[in-house]
Image (cartoon, rainbow, N blue to C red):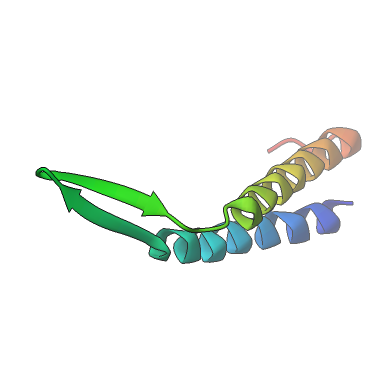
Length: 72
């Protein structure tokens, strides 16, 4: 179970970073009356899903340590 949690944790980190950078690059800024306005055309769903996978991985790792009685 700890291995599955670790895999989900790593996939979540990688996905959040990769999709987050991609989404940030798809944001365009315009200057209007001296104010920079950012308009995002990115799809944020992959970033959110990757974040949820990251949190599930942390939960699985934490619950497997409690179940075996190991302490950090």
